[in-house]
Length: 100
Image (cartoon, rainbow, N blue to C red; front, side, top):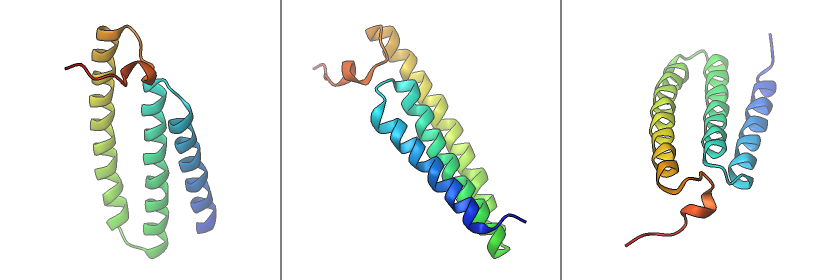
């Protein structure tokens, strides 16, 4: 059996990779994928802790997080498509202006 600390290290590394991708990249699609990586890192730690504590509450919460992440991805991609049709680019630097 794999020890709990390996799962926590994996979760931490994935979260750091997602945070690094979100902070350093300017492409909206890459930023959305980085947020999804961070969600999956949290899911791994929740499943690991719930298995360690022998409780199913964390695993049930993971299903709820997956549903929210799927809705977030669908809405985010719809917004990216709408912004691309409007501005012809998907870099964040172009979207810092507000139109009145």
